[in-house]
Image (cartoon, rainbow, N blue to C red; front, side, top):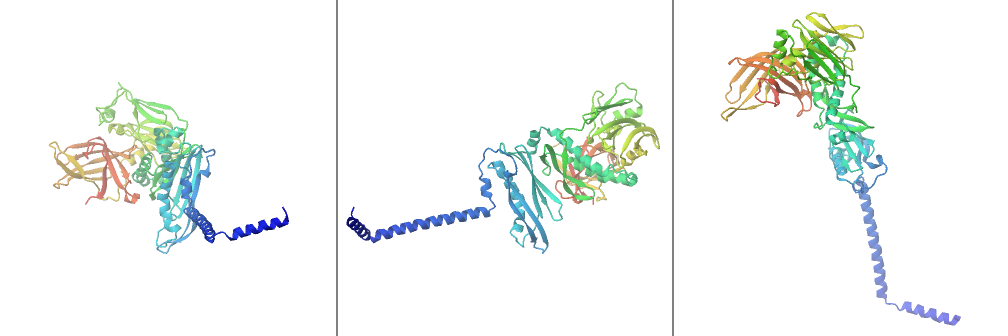
Length: 568
């Protein structure tokens, strides 16, 4: 193409462009501008949305993470969605330092969402005022922290909450299996590790007893062997010992379980005489029993057997028993039910035992069983009294530890059993048992006795009436009054009580009294315990009692009766 032709074509093109309608150009420009503005607005909105999601501490991101195959089970599956520390001044002007680290489980399952919701309800709502620096609010926790324990695909997540003063107030524990997206209950966790509920309860109680007995029983000091200290132990410490043992049950909300490197760990409320508020103590539960000792000890007409850490008694038939033994051992409340072919299990024994010793003691030569624990302390079973009231149980002997051997010898009250420790000192155990007889669960706050809640009675013709019971224990003497709330009639009974031992429910006592108006004799045994279900400390404790055998003095078979009022 010549230069002339090229110039003509170029001019034509310029003329075509200049002749294009202006409206169309403007319209296209507007459309283009509109598109740009919409795009910009969308980007801004998405940017704002992203920023908002980030400010909500990644909740949406965590809860919408799709469930997928996980190759590694570690803390990458946990998100610390709150991590903040600083100082806070409450509505009273008090200033506190706080440090909050709150976790969430990163898994898109219903159980994981429930775990996160539980954490949010329990913790986030209580630290919200602090995080948002609301001066009108209160501070509940000064510290929240967490720790993970991985056992394959199973996460045990423990969240510790500390209150003012730095002591652990409570712990949240969650057990979650990422492999199937399931949150384990306590029972399911036990099944997962291959431990039966029965074994767990027994081993858990053994650990609780070990701790409290190391604290109170194994005190090898002279003051602990004085009569005042011994009686105080059986009236004040033994009820707490029984209370702590009773807390080891899966139904208790304060009992929490997790697994640390294959070992079962238990948080359980524990009380101490010097500390009225419960402490959520941590115990390691053995996966297997310490090597159990199987032993058998035979003395005259009784054989004691120790097997799988359980103690049973067998009584020989066709033996020429003394009239004294027959009247006490076989002709009490248990007379109609006594069976020579039966093995009687001793209740309330929660230590690990390594030796047995049977002997008779006292001027009446009554039989006693002694057990030496792996901690080298001693527990005793008053066989005749316990069998007579159909309440076979034992109790620890306080103030004697480091025991090397037990042996029989003449004591201050006839035959006795002595405990010799590694230092060569010997102690007459009959004196300890004798001093325990008149002790009773500590009700010093109720100087005039204790009164029961209202009890409903149904009479033969279908009628009913209500009464309350007044009980007063002092120095072996028992007063029991049945007070009719409808007509104000009070039926009084007087007699005696004796401490027998403790079973899985509490402290056991024999009672024997007569109602003054009718002369009707009431013989039996009852169990008493602290009841702290509805109170926060031992300072507010009430007492629960239930008849175990014999006369049903509360007219309420197998029912706990609450005593919580001073007798006017």
